[in-house]
Length: 264
View 1 (spheres, rainbow, N blue to C red):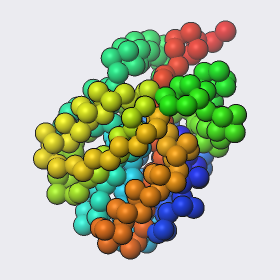
View 2: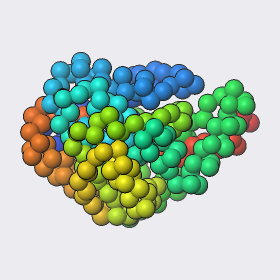
View 3: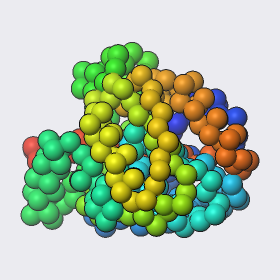
C-alpha cells in the first residue's frame, strides 16, 4: 500500500500527520531487485526531516513493523511513542518471514526461490479482483465502496518481497513507549500471531500497552473513527505536539505465484 492507505484516517486525527510513501511507490521510483529495509527507513526519515516534524507518534501497520524500529532509532528522541497497528514484529535480528503465517512464509520462500532462478524479483500482486478482496481481511465482508478504495492503484501498489528477507531489530529502541493495537477478527494476522508479536516486543525489552479493536486487518479503512480515537488519545497523553508519521507498508502478505509471474 502507498501512503494513501491512510486517507480516511488522517482527517480524523487531532494533530498534523504525514504519510510518507516507501521507495517504489508512486513518485518514489526504486529497483525492486535491490530494495532494502534500510532504503525504506532512510526514505521515511528524509521525508520527516524535510517536513520539519520534531515530535512524532510513529504509526506502523502490518509490515510497517519491519521499518518502524529503524525509523525510531534514526529519529531518536523525536519519537515519543510507537503505535503498532497489528504490525509484524520478528524475533530480534529475524526477518518478516518469521512473523507470518506458516502458509504465507512457505509460499513466499518458494516464490522467491523461483524468481531468483529466473533472475527476477518476487512481488505482491497489486490490485486484485473484488472476489479475492471482499473477505480477505477478516471481520465483515468489505463493501463495494471499500473494495474500490482498497484496490485503487493509487493505494494498492506492486511491492518487492525482498523486504521480508532482511533482519530487523527492536531492541535498539526499547526505551520508546509502544502500544500494540490488536484486531479481534483479523484474518491475515490472526490473534495467535498478534500474541507472538507482542511477546517478541517483550523479549526485545519493551513493555507494550495493548488495545483491542473488534475489526479485521485494515481498520484505517473499515474503522477509521475507532483507530483515530486511539491515536488521538496516545498523542495527547504523550505530549507529541508535532503530529503523526504514518508511513506506507507492504499491506498484503500474498506474493505473486510463479504462475502469475511467468510470462504467457
